[in-house]
Image 1 (cartoon, rainbow, N blue to C red):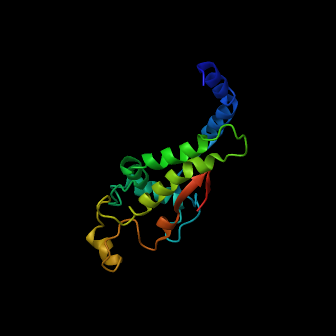
Image 2 (cartoon, rainbow, N blue to C red):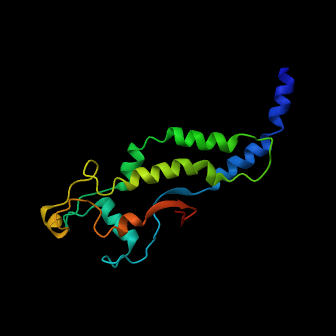
Length: 164
């Protein structure tokens, strides 16, 4: 194939490439609190405020910072997952059918979700509970896990809505 033929073939698909890039750019996707500011059963200020309190901690309430999202973002190794999703999303540019940008990010998002979900209660990443808290939890030293509702509020978000 000559260079001219190759350039013509690539230029035939620039519009489709641009369309897919724009769709991907518009997508707001991540992992975090899927309950918004719904009321938590023991924290009436809601899930948003509870996640923020746990993220930043409180010296007054003697709560150490436990920033699940930050820890996950800094330690998760998901390059292969994002590469896999994007490769699939950008292949077959000559087939101008409906291609979902969510599908491009979903392998990475699922991996990040599973990884970050497992950080709840893990003393490798999170500062252990105080002795008083451990007694309240019947001897369990599981940071951020009491009833499980905070961890259950954690999930994949696409355009502000939980998808799992």
